[in-house]
Length: 100
View 1 (cartoon, helix red, strand yellow):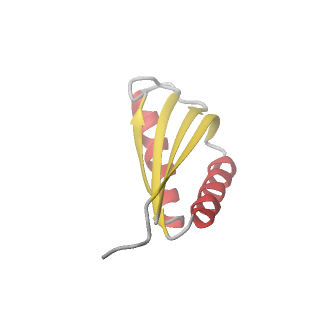
View 2 (cartoon, rainbow, N blue to C red):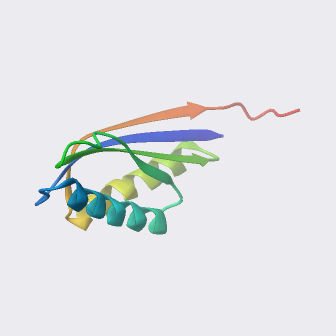
């Protein structure tokens, strides 16, 4: 079993208030949740108008599947055109297969 965790630091375009930011982040997160089997949420930089830190996670049978989902997730964020990815960090946690 592999657990993948992705941290995504983003910059939002044309946002001038926290209300606008919440609306754009909410739309983006709902879109990503609908398309991918991930848990995703805003986890940092909530008080800044044009920046946000998103956290996504997935549990799968192998690392290749997790990598594939995260690569497609990143492509979807780019294609949405709402944000710019400033930084992206991925970590994998591997757990043994022998359960008794």
